[in-house]
Amino acid sequence: MKKISVTIFLVFFALDGYAQSYSSERKINSTKYPLETPMLREDRVIKKDDLSDEQTKYLWEGTTADRDGYIRVKSSISYIELLDAFISHPGFKKGESSEIPQDRKYSPLHLIGMLQEDEFRSSNVYYYGDEKAVFTIWRYKNAGATVTTEEEFFNQTVDGVPAILALAVSDGMRKALWKLSWWKNGRAFELYVNDKVDAYGTPEKTPKIIMELADSLL
Image 1 (cartoon, helix red, strand yellow):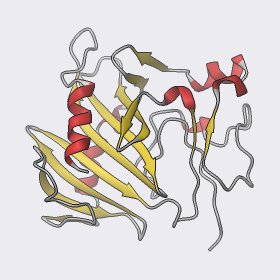
Image 2 (tube, rainbow, N blue to C red; image 1 turned 180 degrees about the vertical axis):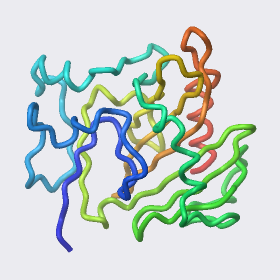
Image 3 (spheres, rainbow, N blue to C red; image 1 turned 30 degrees about the vertical axis):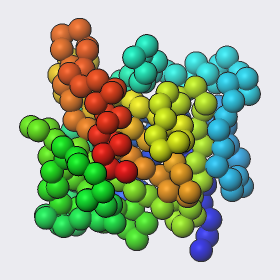
Image 4 (tube, rainbow, N blue to C red; image 1 turned 30 degrees about the horizontal axis):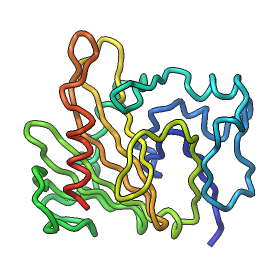
Protein backbone atom coordinates (compact mmCIF):
# COMPACT_ATOMS: atom_id res chain seq x y z
CA MET A 1 0.00 0.00 0.00
CA LYS A 2 1.29 3.46 -0.85
CA LYS A 3 1.71 5.53 2.29
CA ILE A 4 0.03 8.93 2.48
CA SER A 5 0.60 11.73 4.94
CA VAL A 6 -2.34 13.73 6.27
CA THR A 7 -1.89 17.06 8.01
CA ILE A 8 -4.49 17.78 10.67
CA PHE A 9 -4.52 21.16 12.36
CA LEU A 10 -7.89 21.10 14.06
CA VAL A 11 -9.64 18.06 12.71
CA PHE A 12 -9.71 15.73 9.72
CA PHE A 13 -12.94 14.72 8.06
CA ALA A 14 -14.28 12.15 5.63
CA LEU A 15 -12.11 11.10 2.71
CA ASP A 16 -14.92 10.93 0.15
CA GLY A 17 -15.43 14.66 -0.14
CA TYR A 18 -18.86 15.23 1.37
CA ALA A 19 -17.36 16.46 4.63
CA GLN A 20 -14.92 19.28 5.16
CA SER A 21 -12.72 20.76 7.85
CA TYR A 22 -13.66 23.51 10.29
CA SER A 23 -10.44 25.22 9.36
CA SER A 24 -9.86 26.56 5.90
CA GLU A 25 -8.76 23.78 3.56
CA ARG A 26 -5.90 25.98 2.42
CA LYS A 27 -4.30 25.29 5.79
CA ILE A 28 -3.80 21.70 4.76
CA ASN A 29 -0.62 21.24 2.75
CA SER A 30 -0.24 25.01 2.64
CA THR A 31 2.47 26.28 0.32
CA LYS A 32 2.52 29.68 2.00
CA TYR A 33 3.26 28.38 5.50
CA PRO A 34 4.28 24.72 5.06
CA LEU A 35 4.46 22.84 8.37
CA GLU A 36 4.95 19.30 7.14
CA THR A 37 7.19 17.58 4.62
CA PRO A 38 5.67 15.15 2.08
CA MET A 39 7.86 12.32 3.43
CA LEU A 40 6.68 12.57 7.05
CA ARG A 41 5.59 9.11 8.22
CA GLU A 42 5.01 9.59 11.95
CA ASP A 43 2.29 11.37 13.92
CA ARG A 44 3.47 14.74 15.15
CA VAL A 45 2.42 17.42 17.61
CA ILE A 46 3.92 20.77 16.65
CA LYS A 47 5.20 22.70 19.65
CA LYS A 48 4.18 26.33 20.02
CA ASP A 49 7.82 27.44 20.10
CA ASP A 50 8.44 25.76 16.73
CA LEU A 51 6.03 28.13 14.98
CA SER A 52 6.78 31.66 13.91
CA ASP A 53 4.38 34.43 14.89
CA GLU A 54 3.19 34.54 11.29
CA GLN A 55 2.49 30.80 11.21
CA THR A 56 0.63 30.94 14.52
CA LYS A 57 -1.51 33.83 13.30
CA TYR A 58 -2.28 31.92 10.12
CA LEU A 59 -3.34 28.75 11.95
CA TRP A 60 -5.61 30.66 14.33
CA GLU A 61 -7.28 32.77 11.64
CA GLY A 62 -11.06 32.62 12.25
CA THR A 63 -10.43 30.57 15.38
CA THR A 64 -10.49 31.54 19.06
CA ALA A 65 -9.90 29.63 22.29
CA ASP A 66 -12.84 29.88 24.69
CA ARG A 67 -12.11 29.99 28.41
CA ASP A 68 -14.66 27.20 28.98
CA GLY A 69 -12.33 24.70 27.31
CA TYR A 70 -13.12 24.60 23.61
CA ILE A 71 -12.11 26.20 20.33
CA ARG A 72 -14.66 28.36 18.51
CA VAL A 73 -14.27 28.19 14.73
CA LYS A 74 -16.01 30.24 12.06
CA SER A 75 -17.38 27.79 9.51
CA SER A 76 -19.76 27.42 6.59
CA ILE A 77 -23.46 26.64 6.82
CA SER A 78 -22.92 23.44 4.83
CA TYR A 79 -20.38 22.20 7.37
CA ILE A 80 -22.61 23.01 10.35
CA GLU A 81 -25.39 20.98 8.72
CA LEU A 82 -22.95 18.12 8.10
CA LEU A 83 -24.77 15.48 10.14
CA ASP A 84 -27.74 15.48 7.77
CA ALA A 85 -25.32 14.41 5.03
CA PHE A 86 -24.61 11.13 6.81
CA ILE A 87 -28.26 10.07 6.75
CA SER A 88 -28.79 11.18 3.15
CA HIS A 89 -25.64 9.39 1.96
CA PRO A 90 -26.45 6.47 -0.41
CA GLY A 91 -24.41 4.12 1.77
CA PHE A 92 -26.28 4.89 5.00
CA LYS A 93 -27.79 1.76 6.60
CA LYS A 94 -30.71 2.50 8.91
CA GLY A 95 -30.88 0.45 12.08
CA GLU A 96 -27.41 -1.05 11.65
CA SER A 97 -24.34 -0.43 13.79
CA SER A 98 -20.64 -0.32 12.96
CA GLU A 99 -17.78 -1.73 15.04
CA ILE A 100 -18.59 0.79 17.78
CA PRO A 101 -19.87 -1.00 20.92
CA GLN A 102 -23.44 -0.31 21.97
CA ASP A 103 -23.79 -2.02 25.35
CA ARG A 104 -20.79 -1.09 27.48
CA LYS A 105 -22.41 1.82 29.32
CA TYR A 106 -25.69 3.65 29.54
CA SER A 107 -25.84 6.33 26.87
CA PRO A 108 -28.50 8.95 26.12
CA LEU A 109 -27.72 8.40 22.43
CA HIS A 110 -30.23 6.35 20.42
CA LEU A 111 -28.96 4.64 17.28
CA ILE A 112 -30.37 5.67 13.89
CA GLY A 113 -27.97 3.76 11.67
CA MET A 114 -24.43 3.64 10.33
CA LEU A 115 -22.30 4.69 7.39
CA GLN A 116 -19.28 2.64 6.31
CA GLU A 117 -17.30 5.19 4.30
CA ASP A 118 -14.57 2.72 3.37
CA GLU A 119 -12.79 -0.28 4.89
CA PHE A 120 -11.06 1.92 7.46
CA ARG A 121 -13.69 4.50 8.47
CA SER A 122 -17.17 3.95 9.91
CA SER A 123 -19.72 6.16 11.64
CA ASN A 124 -22.74 5.54 13.84
CA VAL A 125 -25.50 8.16 13.67
CA TYR A 126 -27.67 8.80 16.74
CA TYR A 127 -30.53 10.84 18.04
CA TYR A 128 -29.60 12.88 21.09
CA GLY A 129 -32.90 14.31 22.27
CA ASP A 130 -34.15 16.43 19.38
CA GLU A 131 -30.66 16.71 17.89
CA LYS A 132 -28.33 14.34 16.05
CA ALA A 133 -24.88 13.07 16.95
CA VAL A 134 -22.30 11.04 15.04
CA PHE A 135 -19.44 8.93 16.41
CA THR A 136 -16.73 8.01 13.91
CA ILE A 137 -13.77 5.65 14.17
CA TRP A 138 -11.07 5.90 11.51
CA ARG A 139 -8.23 3.35 11.50
CA TYR A 140 -5.91 5.90 9.96
CA LYS A 141 -2.70 3.92 10.51
CA ASN A 142 -4.14 1.02 8.53
CA ALA A 143 -5.16 3.51 5.86
CA GLY A 144 -1.52 4.69 5.62
CA ALA A 145 -2.15 8.16 7.03
CA THR A 146 -0.45 10.22 9.74
CA VAL A 147 -1.74 12.91 12.09
CA THR A 148 -0.19 16.33 12.62
CA THR A 149 -1.67 18.90 14.98
CA GLU A 150 -0.53 21.92 16.99
CA GLU A 151 -0.23 21.51 20.75
CA GLU A 152 -2.25 24.63 21.59
CA PHE A 153 -5.36 23.08 20.05
CA PHE A 154 -5.48 20.41 22.76
CA ASN A 155 -7.98 21.45 25.44
CA GLN A 156 -9.53 18.23 26.81
CA THR A 157 -8.60 14.65 27.72
CA VAL A 158 -10.44 11.50 26.58
CA ASP A 159 -9.52 7.94 27.53
CA GLY A 160 -6.19 9.13 28.91
CA VAL A 161 -5.04 11.01 25.79
CA PRO A 162 -5.18 14.70 24.75
CA ALA A 163 -8.25 15.74 22.76
CA ILE A 164 -9.51 18.72 20.79
CA LEU A 165 -13.00 20.11 21.45
CA ALA A 166 -14.24 22.64 18.90
CA LEU A 167 -17.52 24.43 18.17
CA ALA A 168 -18.25 25.42 14.57
CA VAL A 169 -20.39 28.55 14.22
CA SER A 170 -21.50 30.82 11.38
CA ASP A 171 -22.44 34.50 11.56
CA GLY A 172 -26.20 35.04 11.79
CA MET A 173 -26.94 31.33 12.25
CA ARG A 174 -28.30 29.70 15.41
CA LYS A 175 -27.23 26.20 14.46
CA ALA A 176 -23.78 25.10 15.61
CA LEU A 177 -21.78 21.87 15.58
CA TRP A 178 -19.53 20.43 18.27
CA LYS A 179 -16.65 18.16 17.38
CA LEU A 180 -14.46 16.25 19.82
CA SER A 181 -11.38 14.59 18.31
CA TRP A 182 -8.74 12.30 19.80
CA TRP A 183 -6.25 9.70 18.57
CA LYS A 184 -5.11 6.47 20.21
CA ASN A 185 -3.42 3.24 19.07
CA GLY A 186 -3.59 4.13 15.38
CA ARG A 187 -7.26 5.07 15.45
CA ALA A 188 -8.86 8.51 15.19
CA PHE A 189 -12.10 9.10 17.11
CA GLU A 190 -14.56 11.88 16.24
CA LEU A 191 -17.74 12.79 18.10
CA TYR A 192 -20.02 15.34 16.40
CA VAL A 193 -23.03 16.82 18.20
CA ASN A 194 -25.53 19.34 16.84
CA ASP A 195 -26.27 22.40 18.98
CA LYS A 196 -27.68 25.93 18.91
CA VAL A 197 -26.25 29.25 20.08
CA ASP A 198 -28.15 32.22 21.49
CA ALA A 199 -27.98 35.84 20.33
CA TYR A 200 -24.69 36.24 22.18
CA GLY A 201 -23.16 33.14 20.62
CA THR A 202 -23.40 31.02 23.77
CA PRO A 203 -24.07 27.32 23.01
CA GLU A 204 -26.93 25.47 24.70
CA LYS A 205 -24.73 22.46 25.45
CA THR A 206 -21.67 22.77 27.65
CA PRO A 207 -18.26 21.14 27.12
CA LYS A 208 -19.10 18.94 30.13
CA ILE A 209 -22.10 17.50 28.28
CA ILE A 210 -20.01 16.69 25.21
CA MET A 211 -17.33 15.04 27.33
CA GLU A 212 -19.94 12.94 29.15
CA LEU A 213 -21.35 11.79 25.80
CA ALA A 214 -17.88 10.72 24.71
CA ASP A 215 -17.41 8.80 27.95
CA SER A 216 -20.70 6.98 27.43
CA LEU A 217 -19.38 5.60 24.13
CA LEU A 218 -16.13 4.20 25.50
